[in-house]
Image (cartoon, rainbow, N blue to C red):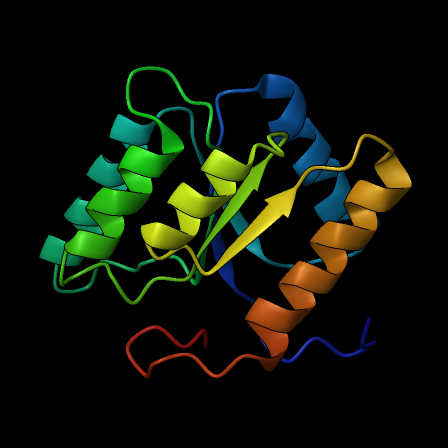
Amino acid sequence: MSEARLRCGEILLVDDSAKDVRLIREVLCDQGHQHQLTVARSGEEALERLRSAAIDAEGKQPDLVLLDINLPRLSGIEVLSCIKSDPALRQLPVLMLTTSRAECDVTASYEHHANGYLVKPARYDDFAALIGVTLEFWLEHSQLPKRMAPA
């Protein structure tokens, strides 16, 4: 990873697993990331946050959404579909971050316009490496639309 971080991004993590949320926070801390992490524990909470920010003229949308598939009530695929069908939200990069390797989940994610599908590795070092390269790519090297570009 690059030594000098170019941008400090905002990440919305949508995951109901306290263990996975803690793990991602640990990875961000261990790797020295200065990115702002906001957590939504359900699909409804994520959509509420995103929609309220879209309505508010000064509402800040996240630069990246990490979305689990297995959520209570609304599945991650349903949340993804809502995001990508909403003109105010569809430009948000959404990466599915899940334990599922099921081909039907991979296919459904891309059919609903996910920007990527990442399987959570079981080992901490592998998980940390995946998160590190993902954030480096999306928050430091990718060119985002002007309304979304991190300061």
